[in-house]
Image 1 (cartoon, rainbow, N blue to C red):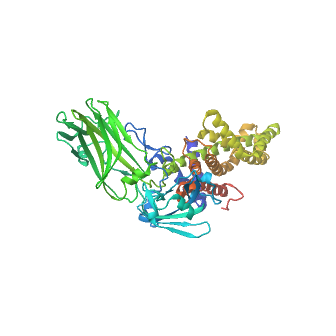
Image 2: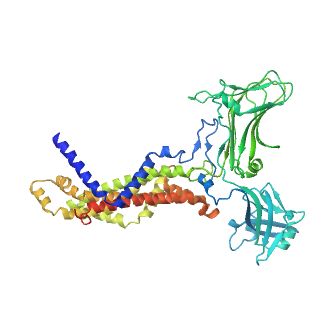
Image 3: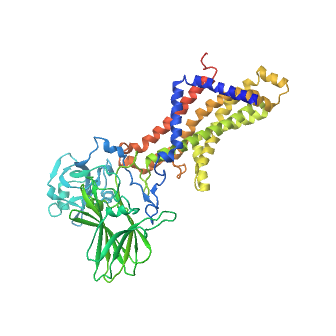
Length: 620
């Protein structure tokens, strides 16, 4: 027991002495602080990041009957953009550029407009230009067309009256055939004529909005959110705490109960609405509506979702419900591809009504229960770093970045440990045993050293994926370990060749010590300082290599990593369609995280080298 206490006490004294030396290295302290910072992020990633890193969605328990609702739309900007003073908000003038291409065929003029970002410098022939529409599609809803100017290929400007152009659907600009027919336009302009269109629009940074506060009707107070009217007398809408839809192992919630006092003599319309204020000048990018409805009786009733602003009314979707005595979970979503619907609903800030209409045929005595009634409006800003461009479930880039910390640390540390252990073992055996064993190990080491590492890693990862269908994080660790031990093995061998000729080793041999005893008790402690340094210096290489493979699309697609963020950005085509500076927050934080964590281990490695390397150790 006394010996054990002495060993523990001696170990503590050695650690204190080491720490006193390490504290004198400023870059070592900086590197250690960065590693601790990333380690905390990796450990508490599920707490720090609110959403799943891959295909995040609102759970089904919030909206039954749906496979999961997306948390945001594609390519959202960070929420803190709304605090930047130079970001345009409100009514503003926008100028967009298009190129005209046209031809006269069979006495009929055909024209096409190509957006500036899709027009090559050398121009297009008419066959390729024919793939584009005969109108100029604006990127925002047009509140007012201010002016249209053409710049001919020779640089001569040509101005048009706004009456010569018309706007359809709020976004499509095309010549007014009554004033400016296509053949007249082609007489005035030649192919590759540039058109500058200026219009007024509402530009804003829109956040996600949940219209209904308590869409599950968990309390009786939730009934107060809603107002209702009926086209005929005899109906009542009340809160019901017994017939709400219940998910397994979930506490039963309430609902709205719509009942009639008797059989209706004529068709009836029950209108239930929730008032809300929409504060933005720009329409939402998408919306999601959900309603769970239960009815009794054989008659078919109709449910209709509608938005009302002042005297304007727009129906979003109409659904017929025929089957009785069961809950029907109804959904309306995915309006991103048809932005004109959203523009027509939410044109300006103001008070709106979200309306649920129930049309009940005559001769019906029915009871209806409504539950999980909600409407989500999706904006164009979300989270700390916005969202990516995944089509179905866009990912929160911040959550992916946070969870990627864990992957990089695991891959870096385990690869360093495994490769260092292999290199240490083979270096000790090769250096001390010598002879044929030394020759065989070193020639195999030389063979792996001269192989092109990255191309061979790519071949191995592709082969593993072709064999098993995917490649996991552990496959990556094995591949990195396989090519990460050779340099350390040669360094250990060179030290062992020197140590085995020392007097203390000869004395151990004379005392009858065996090979294993001498290696374990005399050689290994003298090379262990090199192990600590190599462990620290091997991690950056593993982190960068894993990120490189993921960036090339050779990582695990189900695993969030910093390299996968770069791969998704590269595959998205955002650089060519929107520009790198527009979505810098998608790629730069991941690059900065890779560089910072790798540099932190390098700084720690330099600090350890100064302390443990006798040639660099300062005099004490």
